[in-house]
Amino acid sequence: MVATTAAVGAVATGAFTAIVPALEDGTATAAAADAPYDTALASNSTAIDTAPAVSMVPVELAAESESVENHLARVVQAADLAELHAQQAREQAERERIADLIERGGLNGWIAEALQILELPQSLAPSVKKIVLAESGGNPRAINNWDANARRGTPSQGLMQTIPTTYKHYVHPEVKNRPITDPVANITAGIRYMIDNYGMDTLEAGGRSNSSGNYVGY
Image 1 (tube, helix red, strand yellow):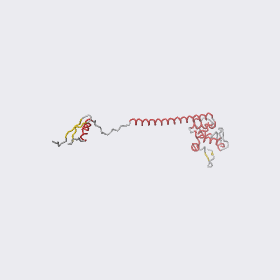
Image 2 (cartoon, one colour; image 1 turned 60 degrees about the vertical axis):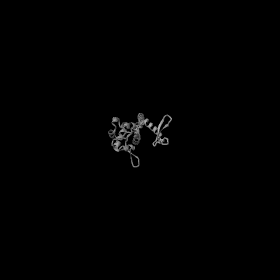
Image 3 (tube, helix red, strand yellow; image 1 turned 135 degrees about the vertical axis):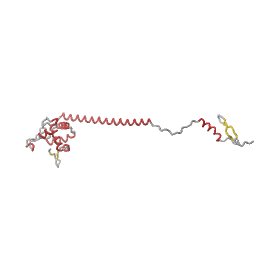
Image 4 (cartoon, one colour; image 1 turned 90 degrees about the vertical axis):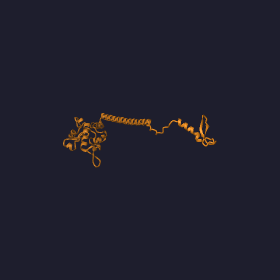
């Protein structure tokens, strides 16, 4: 009797024989032949987790970034420290220069000492020197015996040519016990008088000048 349903056939594989359905003509279908492998793989395979991957924090990169920031901070700190040391060196060199000027004396030393006492910048020295040379020629004992002050009996004296009352009022307290012809004390009085009456700009300009640019006494 001819069977009307698919016969069961045996298909030999290398390691085992698989029982697969056969067509009426006795041939096994390709799909049927693969079915046992699919079943076996399915039963023995490990399930794959398809959940989204968790984002990982790049610890090494973060540490590296922090290290760079620390390095940069150290570089900046070192630069600031180097500039501080350079500034301190410049200030020390300036102090030594002024001390040397004062020790040697003379007009430049007297001016330097007076500015130091007044706590004014040494950059004013050329302007002060211009005034001193115009007033007295740099002679601390110079006395004006011909102007109106002299005729009143109060001649201008010293490097900055101050009269006694002006000197007494404006001389710096630190040197107030020195005589009017003391070069340093006289300069402090003249500078303070000029700033008080004509302003710092006039001192910086080296004294008063007329429209022609010529020096005018103060």
